[in-house]
Length: 326
Ligand code: TXA
Ligand code: MG
Image (cartoon, rainbow, N blue to C red):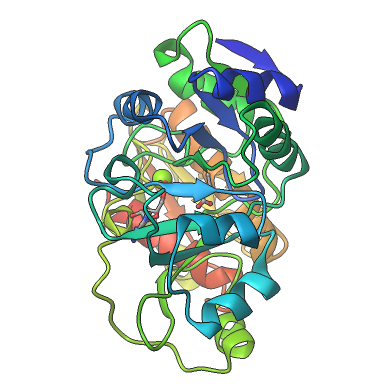
């Protein structure tokens, strides 16, 4: 495995059918060319991910997205115009380009135009190398299945380094600026359905599309399992007044970590993992804090969630899933 800051090295590895862990504004992805079945098979094997869990195809622009999809409704075009490049994924009926090995056998495909400058450069260079402006990089989050997503290159090398081959690349693009995975919108029905909350909020989708959100979807999104995004430590959601009278204990698996906005004081003996000032910062530090809890061998993480508006809703969603994970 080669650790680099050069997007061209990552593009070359991808062009040759190797894997590249890539920075995006949401989290790091484990990328492979979306048209190469053997490369995609390695993504699944490296993650330990079940083969029927579909991948997101990352492309350069909305034009390239339309090469992977068909029958996009007008509201999907509105979302693409307003939200791309950026932390939003659209699920649409697939075109013949999107093969079963990417879609998990479903008739839909998830597409996203990322905004991270290095990721965009990888896509541009790769498009030149393979002579295909619509080239796609399939990339799930670069973590073992069910675990916490990585937001730095160091998270990726710690978790997947020993599983990657010599010719694979990890591209270091700094810490992800959003910190939680993209908003996923199912665009296969008459109304948009929010499959996974993220930086683009439900209100944003309503405002952009001038539609109500559909309540249910026929689309299967396995990554939205109840138990996901889980560290080894047990995660528990608490209200800030639930911390009163609490005291920490020392010792393996007995120590308690705390994750809360900075106006919440730390009870005696608890290990303060992070004190974000805003919900945006909470999202940005969330996964690093959960990894830190495991590095410190904490038994429990108490999380006081931010208000569930905007990206706060995505933080509450991930904390709830992390809490269901053990
Ligand atoms: O921010 C992100 O979305 C990151 C970065 C790397 O782009 N990627 C990511 O990928 O979170 P992953 O594989 O960990 O999560 C992808 C989610 C899963 O919940 C999967 O079920 C859903 O996308 N998905 C993919 N294709 C789908 C499809 N055709 N229909 C419904 N859901 C789909
Ligand atoms: Mg994931």
